[in-house]
Figure 1 (tube, rainbow over the protein chains, first blue to last red):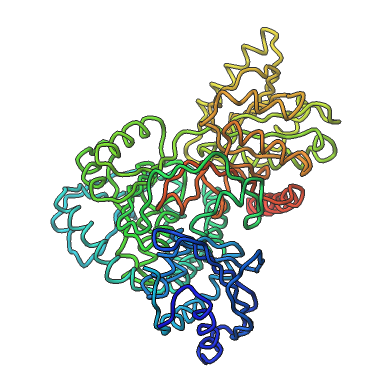
Figure 2 (tube, helix red, strand yellow):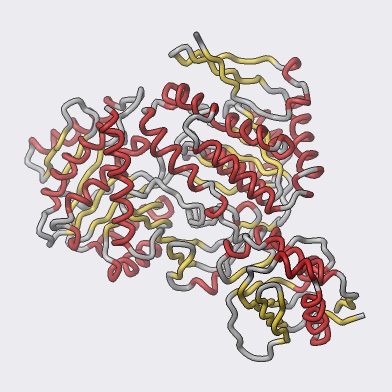
Length: 133
Length: 505
């Protein structure tokens, strides 16, 4: 079991993304890095930011951000909503449209990449996770 | 041979028609509108049906697929030979009183371009902390005013109800599309003044994807049908309503009675502001554009201008501008004529009111059309803000400085909505900021006042956001990042439409 959110989780996630052939195919045109921000709520005390450099179906870099970091896209939501995404109870695009996540960056670009977003969720859901709560 | 149009829509597999009585309205020109007489038993079945389609299909369907379907439906309607569009062309001029030229060029071509996948507002909400100054969003700018005060949140509304006013053409289609993005079942009370298009649009969804269509019901009932309205409110998670002050009172009372949140859009006041930098060789271009805002939908929309403020100090005085505008009103009137609702009485009313003022020596000058199709009034009295009689009656008023306008308009506060502008970039943000402070919500390039972009807030709230959350933040938008670029595009659009329609005559 891997604790979420943690350094270990993001490292396993990066490894799995880079081994995933389906993601390689559906994200072959993707160029852009992400900040995934997990906002505190009743179950998480402190904000955590993951940085992911996604490029043409591969993850070139992924780590927990300790200081200020800029990225082409920022996807921010509460810990509880992230948990729903990782458990495949919430499609991240639906979460974005319903305001459960906030995106900083061009939403049109993200919407053209729904299959890639879904595959990232599929990959995340294969990691056995030990949640904070 | 006559035509009968059904103004209702729901899943036909419910076979409810045999259990219903219908009302037939002969509206002239061999057109009859068929409307069901609802009972709460029937409505219960319809509500259960749209909920079932939502749960069994909509919730399980990929959002990308829904977006593709919306795109296909829009493409269908953009085709002038599409059967639904042919029906509309034949029927809506009689139903609405607008000319076919207006419906075709401004209604269809522009309205449906907004419903393209790439233009839909897919950010559910914005963080107001990132928008404390006018900040780029899509092809414009937005700023958040006030403090967050969330009074309602439901990220997963099951049933959304819509009560549509008759002065916003096509609004039912926009409502259907937004609800589907939120995976919500939809009921829509279409307006008595235009009960046709909603059902036609729902049927066009049915052609492409019946299951998606069956999560929507189009219900043409009278506002006076209290038991029907009560029943539908009690079955909904949120209501979005548009209407005047009477509707505001009755629907707000109803929402309180059933403790249902309501996103209301009520009576508004909109106007045009033109600065001296455009009162030179550009004045004719600006008059062309202003004539569009005044003529479109015969000023029936809340976003239509009721006054034009022109800043003094340019080469062309506000009085001279009124004369130039009158010439352009005539040209535009030929290309986008009035329909069956001529509004001649309203135009004459405006004429007589101001004729008396002109006679007794007030600083008033009338520029009438020969056939009372429109009226431009130069009114040197700037202190009074008066509603226009509408139907293309517009007052031009001088101001020493466009920055005087916020104080003049301030008493209207929450009634303020759209401002059509020709103010250079370097002065626009300051002006927009001052207008945002006093209550205006939409700053748009002159001639685009009636063209709501899907990403723009509407009366200070984003159309998608307010369906799942009601917040105290008031969002104000400017629909372009560069006013001169906006004016250039607007002139091309205006001339394309006007020249095309004039050539056809």
